[in-house]
Image (cartoon, rainbow over all chains, first blue to last red; front, side, top):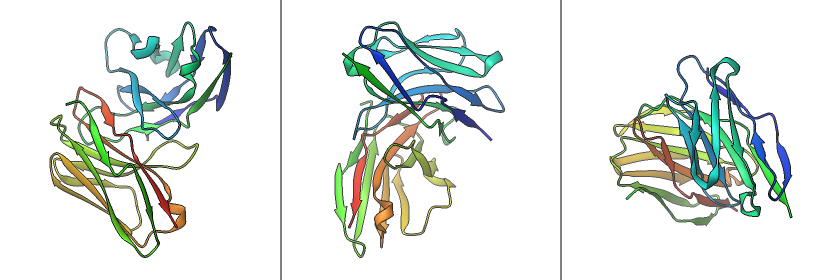
Length: 114
Length: 111
């Protein structure tokens, strides 16, 4: 069975500081990995995805993530956080074939201090 | 069109009401999903339609009834809901190689 763990429930960083959100996955085949962001009361917006190839993937809003197969990790990073980045972040894993399910981690709530 | 559109955005219904949530996409995706999300929790899968056939039903109570009239539309029919069913209901679509696209959700309150 596939599963995703986000070890940090809450993270607080100062505006302008760097950010790393952790994600560990368990998947029986080649994983397709995603990071989504959700603002309060809103839907999920895709930040970036990894299917294959270069293990460092670039996303929107200045985010990037690195796939490390040996560590079963897909951590999200941003070099300089903006106040507007405060939100809930979800890591997810799933086969990317039509009809396959997507499994989410528990989420990390990011708070940004001025 | 690269969006998944959900209507209504907000819905308040009594426990004896019948209502429907609607979801539409015009990206040609052949899989569509319903997820339920409670506050401060990740989305939980309810149903998956693949090529307009129900392929996954995550043991959802029968008071939730999905329907996929065609490849662009997905409905969720609601009947005799309980207050604990209040949540954000998210629709998503997927086609191999392009990832999953989510709608902005319907905020449902059962009174």
